[in-house]
Length: 189
Image (tube, rainbow, N blue to C red; front, top):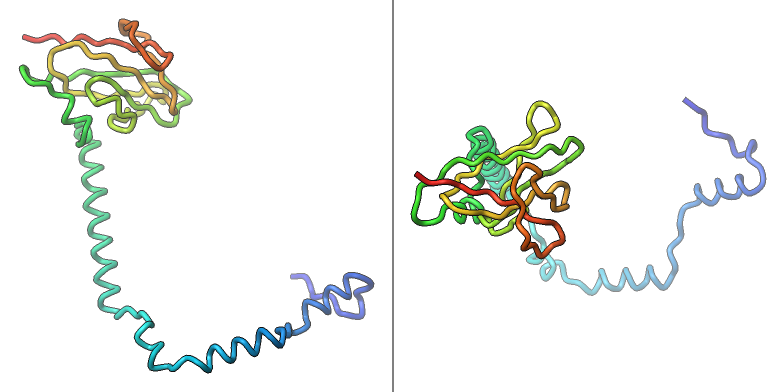
């Protein structure tokens, strides 16, 4: 460990800076008087109701409730991820159209350097956060399985925030974002 330099070893500007840092600060007289006057004018009985305090039992109960809620939410997310079910919300509700049973459709894309990949389309209201894909163990391929009723669906992948078409699917010409949509046809019985 280095020793503190002694004052007699310091010279010039360094010695002056060291003495200024060691000197006790002296508040301006006007500031000190204004502070003392403000403190003196307050009656402690008027200030006491404004003080907020938490009882230890209430704080512990609040912390326990947060831990339980967080654990339940984490468990639900992990359970849903293992089952391969689409997340709840707009994507899951709008993926099933009336008039047929939902069929599992697997979407996959190769994006080896990607950090986040999702799918948008007619079946999830073009919501980029609704259907995230999961990286496979090969590290290159991302996939998700979506339950769709028979019909024609336009879709695209969102790879790190940018739209990308599925190179293995048919292309649709009506796109408003500069990237051609991909099309999947889901057959019925």
